[in-house]
Length: 376
Ligand SMILES: Nc1ncnc2c1ncn2[C@@H]1O[C@H](COP(=O)(O)OP(=O)(O)OP(=O)(O)O)[C@@H](O)[C@H]1O
Ligand SMILES: [Mg+2]
Image (tube, rainbow, N blue to C red; front, side, top):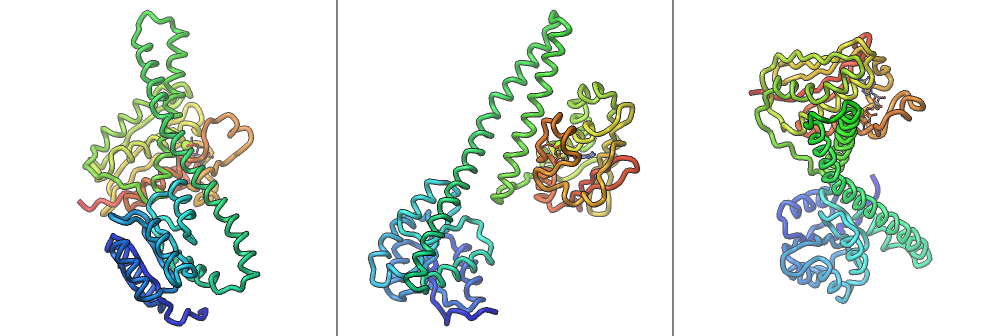
């Protein structure tokens, strides 16, 4: 192991007790001495009393916020030299800019992993020790890092806005297409167009929701709201919605649900099954069937979606759940609206329930299996 700071003192300022305890445990395990403060005002007093080598500072606190505390510390004796690391749950550009303006050295977003917290504290302390010349180089690299971070945050925010703002107009397109279809006087070609609009709108909505949930999951915010879900009813509902697309491809959709119910988030579960069935429809050859089955397996419920398509080669079975991964490429990908996010969403949704997803060989074809723990 690398040489430690000799009992370097770290001041942790956070109004949340759990956050303080976590930071304290992480840092003390590595031999740091930790001083705690629950408010900004207390943080300043502790800084004056202990002259810590490094400060971890929560941004949002009642009373004096992290930015104000940072500015004050910078004016205290020894306050210019101590690295200050901001902790924030707000992953946005304004907060990031505010942190830099206030004179922060680094910016961590919550939830912070202990290993990351430690690495950032160690780096901050090491940087402060470097000589002046080196520090200049470091400064350049830091500016580049900050610019990159800023860009990344801007991109995340833009994606979130776009995805969010697309939801309503696309839902409304779907709704209007449904109105059209209710008009019995509509000519068959017009009905066909309306069906087409519905199908495309639905596929776009699926993409939008997948993207939203993937980013939620990355921020640790994908929390399933569990309820008893009537599995057969849910599967039949999904199959009914996809029936038109399936029969256009000459496919039969079959249901073989044996488990009566599962404890899961109804919306996440429905969309996971939807993604798997849509994939199966895309890959199964005409004249075959796509089957959704569900059965108890010990203290879990397994849902399987089977098709008779080309299947997934063994060496791709683990990678296929990563985002943007698509097989076949070229020809096939060009014709498809897909972006390789469906399975990523499914994996995140299942794992948010403490479950697992994998793909098996159906010889021929693929079977995607989702296992939801359920010991009721
Ligand atoms: N049932 C299946 N049979 C064979 N290959 C499949 C099957 N399901 C998925 N795949 C392969 O896995 C890739 C990733 O699937 P995923 O659902 O993540 O993305 P997509 O369907 O291409 O796009 P999206 O779901 O984002 O619209 C697909 O592009 C396809 O190559
Ligand atoms: Mg898909």
